[in-house]
Amino acid sequence: QVQLVQSGAEVKKPGASVKVSCKTSGYTFTTYGINWVRQAPGQGLEWMGRISTYNGNTNYAQKVQGRVTMTTDASTSTAYMDLRSLRSDDTAIYYCARDRSAGDLTFDYWGQGTLVTVSS
Amino acid sequence: EIVLTQSPATLSLSPGERATLSCRASQSVDTYLAWYQQKPGQAPRLLIYDASNRVTGVPARFGGSGSGTDFTLTISSLEPEDFAVYYCQQRRNWPPLTFGGGTKVEIK
Image (cartoon, rainbow over all chains, first blue to last red; front, top):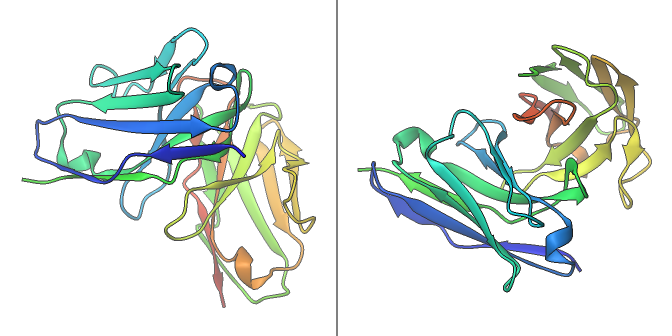
């Protein structure tokens, strides 16, 4: 069965960086893109960006452009999201989510979420 | 950027009642719209894709309709497990891919 398992919660100071992993299983990794979506406490869903697991192409939301890098390791079927220069408003649950089909940015499988807390 | 506006923000209903949730787009998204359900402490769950296609395993009481700028998610008869927050999401124009602000369906 398809699974996306994320790394554990992180606490970071303002200005630091965080790297969240998303290990996938149960399907061919390079067939479906991986997206990152975050949710601030009590708030809605915000799409951060997507990486093609086929060729590594990335698209980022303007709000995080310049601070975020999404990568993959096909040998371990794992996707990564690296966010730099953290601010207090980056405190959120970060989810990875898989494209429903090739090029279809509807998310059929999600990771369990990783809480990132930014606090001095 | 396509803005999705969901209404109402909160819907207070009793089990067995019909729920009608609205999602309006700032410009046409054709039928490239999905609906998700999110319960506290859980990741979102895909219910409906391409406006009206129910995901395998989603109960038939969930139905999606609409095209262009106006969409509706209908729950024909609320079950206790349906009380949750529902989000719409468009994939017509991206980046950025966008979500609506959500509708909370709560027990009256």
